[in-house]
Image 1: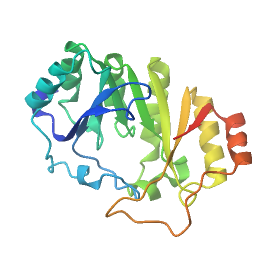
Image 2 (image 1 turned 60 degrees about the vertical axis):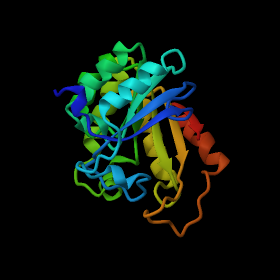
Image 3 (image 1 turned 135 degrees about the vertical axis):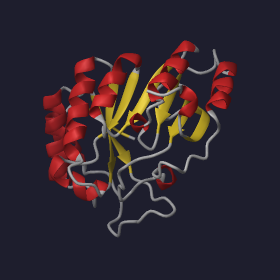
Length: 230
């Protein structure tokens, strides 16, 4: 554990209406992620040594001025749980009177589990099924920790949603079905399919983007938890 001033901040958004459903939140982007997902929308946050955001004391000063205007603070990334200063940063945000949310890919399940008592909401990424995980993230044995993290989040009782960035070139209908069953068995509360968007510097896909067919979506809703499209 490290002092909050040591948090590697890759960016800061003083107001977001989309990073925590139904809440107005500030977002602290933590620098660093060990995965290299083929569709990463923010590859500048991948290197651990590339932090270009404001200092923590500047973030705290902004948050203090926004008490009464914001509902909470979300720590995102990158993968925020890799930073040893995250627990103290979360504690500081709570001390200012804010609810705290977390975006995580579940890469470090033990660190996530230890943090859960201090969180009000978790947005957990589930990128694909277990068999396809390594190819998508570019890292071996990357799927098992995510499933461990999912179990920890569900067991904690913390409000959560599981998010999957969807493109038909990334997840087949059968893959989505396996994911739905996994989430249902785990007891996940809510599953969100997020629309894939191309970003500068990330590869595109020749196959046109589209949502799954209505019959497939109905099938997924029968198999899995509450499902939403975003």
